[in-house]
Image (cartoon, rainbow, N blue to C red):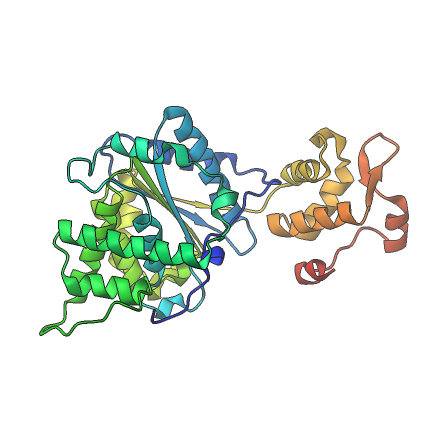
Length: 371
């Protein structure tokens, strides 16, 4: 490939956080949108999760996928999932996002005959028994032989789909050589280079055809503020032309998109598609004291009412309600035995620790993680 992005393991971010708390209203919104998108021939939908660093965007998306999976399993809805994280520097790398997405969707064991493409029932037989937990899918464990076999199958699948929907050979070579890292694929000379808009559309067509067997497709994309402009263009085509697709994006403030995301598309999302209930955005805020107390209860494996209010107050003031910082504080408190059962029969601060420290004080997040 022309670049070296994050490893496969790094790009499949996010194990389920056992101490996840709060976000009930936001969770209801995204689960409701997923359910609506899964109904027969519904147009695609996009859900933006905005917030500052450490506010819990990634954890929220991971938890949302878990909840969506549960809901779909009950309703026997087949779901195809691809999860990816953009990295700082990807902004300068054309189509960087789609190396991993294409690797995911083209590695699926799909039916090749035209009769089954687009059939919502055929995919259930091919995928129903392959449910895996998020944690299992987050671990890259392929051996070199399996990787070679996988890459061969991906290229074969790409060529089959390209032949079925009349994608030019030059586009297949671009995807195979530059995005999928097929070193054996040689770039042939062409009299006239394809227009970039045509390449974008062909890539969108490949994605739509490759996922047409599934009842529901979910793209979970984190740190999309780093996504390159051409990946945004492909994503726009997919969004505007697909059905039964939910795109979940985790990002910092949307104003940061001015250099990579087409302004007209952003305007369409917030105005036209927002009015049609195809686009929703939520901004995650800091946790409150009650939610910090719930997190403490999960960390200490007890009931919320068994956690002394002083712990929730102190951790809240120190972390300012930032979930990641609060979780690290509570984990270190448990590990270092700073919490014990106190006079009111609740879990509170160890008296010796409080006396020694002149009140409960914690270092900043960087120092805490190095302890």
